[in-house]
Image (cartoon, rainbow, N blue to C red):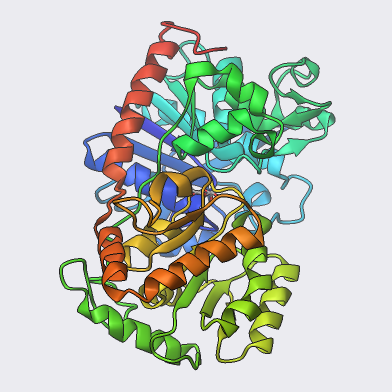
Length: 492
Ligand code: GLC
């Protein structure tokens, strides 16, 4: 199939969070399965793009209307595309300059203008390339206008190929909600914004909602999160009814992890290599991590790792108040992350109060993250909600049985130690005492090194690969092209 992906992030070119890894992982797997995959994303930094081998595509600029203006937009492509997905960057510094979610301070550089321009450029690309497109696959709210424009503007012969549309929701908490007047920036008929239905959302404009309604198929990144978002307003963030209304056209497909990039047998960031078959090197990783972070713990003490954005979603605020008590019980903590200033301060204060027991490194450091996965004894992921999550998959693969809350992708990937195939610890309530009980269960099992070794070995062997996920998307694409061809109305 000819598949066009539209996204605001793509690893490693433009990465803020898991979205970048997910889009790149899926695009790569689909390309390996023989599909022609093209990815469109904004050019946030022309110099970095040039360093990565991008050049201007020959030919005249493409005129695209944004609000009352026409912009002459250039597309960048790799001079030597190589194998795998082909990437196209939409180069318009007045709109995309400034960074992935940091805007350049110009009036034209707003999230809405960005979304409008990205989606239009993406839909014009198949025509420019003379490339019949089977599927337009948009990721998250920043790309959600692609299916909307496809319905409103591009229906008919303008787009070569059937161009069925899919919207993947990576995080429903970010919907792109804007004042109703902003719709003029989108070049869509103004009555559409007010029309209760497509773009209108409690008097405002909501891009995610419009994408959910316009796309032929909608999915999110785990089956459990798909269920949670239609049954519980805390997860649906106001869109639970809209999602439920799509019926069988809304589903969950679990993400994969990139096991080539995340392999403790060949990971250059680690002081020693190990694997499920030869786990011996892990001990050296444990010892080295403690000394790197200045943790002064008896060798047999259980060290909990945490790597992630310091935002409410990740639930670190459940764990921080417990650390003093747990340090008294012999636990240690290795925390890495950056995010909300208040959480950063709280983490720093706990580390300062418990030197040698709690280490906090503020920042994003890929190599240290890998050493934490490989050197901690258990990995904390007490997320309040988690559409899929990657950390728990890396932790399993790096021999750190995860302690997770039973939500979203965490519920779909980690099996509690009480089960025959257990590889981690799962707790239900988003309350410190529930997390405490799970950590104590981990501490208890830790005393029985043979049982712990079995738990760890099962995790080391679990595989959540992108190939399996890609097969799920192929089925979704078939359904979506059927819809685009007029077979059913997919719950609309
Ligand atoms: C978002 C979600 C995360 C998911 C990722 C990739 O970052 O918060 O749970 O794994 O997207 O789909």
